[in-house]
Image (cartoon, rainbow, N blue to C red; front, side, top):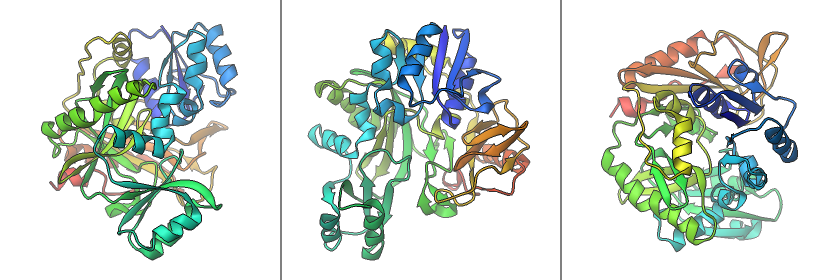
Length: 413
């Protein structure tokens, strides 16, 4: 089969890496891809992931059997709709279903209607209304800007002063939808779920991301600064509850609403005293969760996609080892940062997945906020952490920073 991967980040790097391993895949293409993918895929860097018409033409000209869409933006803009209208199979939801990520309000209303456990919320449509609401709400409070925000549109305000700052940031103009949510106490985890209509198959291995920029979960929210799997202190009973109360009901709800989902549904959950509740849904693999989960997965991802399309049983096979991934980011991220800084010392054999690097005169330089994820594997989380930070130490650059406590929650349990 000929497979086309859409996207240019670390998630797409690992998708290409994993699909390249499949005996079912003969040729692999990436649009726009990144330079680190060039050894495993035919990278088409001259085509933008926003250029849907050119992507469709490319897929037709190259007889692509399946297109695997990595990022959220092409999904919410309807790339899957255009490809499927031209008889090209797509792993990824259509525009209407991708609203589950594209609109925080759509997701909250859906969960409320179908009694799927999540935080209580209030929809606020203007800056003035938001300023009035924060005078009387309970703290801490979570503010989520409606629409896509690359993991950085969520602010936790602990008091009125922080809430005022958040409102100023999320309301550059008077109008705009912000969802105010009850703050939930508990431990967060990420569950990836294959979904085809009412057929939902959650991964039987979960991951735990680290969203805050700095150690001890301090600093602003980011797209993810590190991750590990499995999560040994969150047991099978929690996964079963998450499946029964969230994964299966949301798949059925989307069919009921006329927006059936096909692809990978990310459930960002939190284990509260009342059981697992939804923090967010994504319409695609998490990043950097994909990098550790697909590193640990021994079974064939391409076969899983085919089985999902045909609603056949999906049996996952995992390595016995644990996997830890540590993200190195440009200094200043998630705020402003410089680009074009040289980075070296890494390999492209599955130990590192590139998010924000490009090649200039045979040298890699930074081109984004999150730059590269270093992977470590070991017999348990503690040993995998050691390997991950040894991989971090091999990277040569004075332009990057990283957290030193990735996976400590599992080790200290």
